[in-house]
Length: 276
Ligand SMILES: [Zn+2]
Image (cartoon, rainbow, N blue to C red):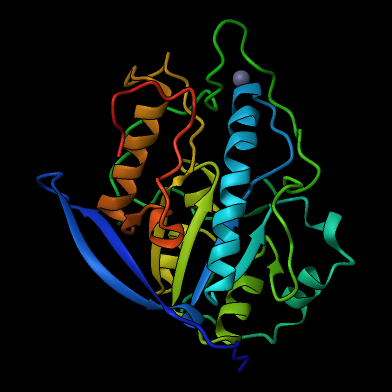
């Protein structure tokens, strides 16, 4: 077991949602920092959709600031830039993940393939259909739509890798890292909520099925949603709908305020009156 230096409790205001009434419920939770991991999902350096890339660029500095404070509190940081981990093959963060001793998960980890990883698909045993139609892959640009391609080569450079952090996109490696540290609590952030933050082998569906206490940091995420598709709401309302879906069927959410003490992050293009 690896134990870290003095850590504090983190106090989270967790929001979940009733499956029937859709009403939000708030609970206060105290999580031990040294029993908590924060997983950064797919904050890549570039994206095939120009709007998505722009939003990641805007989110990244605030996410890095939040991660820095989380790390100082004693939370274990896992960088999970899917499909570009080889960029980091010689780093101590990558080696930390590869060298974590094998731990047998209580359930079989997903092996369903998608986008080069083991994917956790939408699961009707747990959840209703997603509240947004992302079947066009969700380019939100006005006018001409972006061409789908593999645009990323690494994690966004401004998100710092620090000694003691790990880097992996693999479900088993993630499980090994958590087991080695006796970590029960997992915070998910990054992009995109309707796809990778739910479906990747280190992400929400898999972590919930493994029995972890999972929470989504809801102001530190985004979706791939094209407002021209159902339900025909603006992009940020679309994101809020997916957050509601997660809160209803998978795990509660909280804002970065609980870690930083600062106002929640909000995209500049989000012109709505209030979103939280
Ligand atoms: Zn686009």
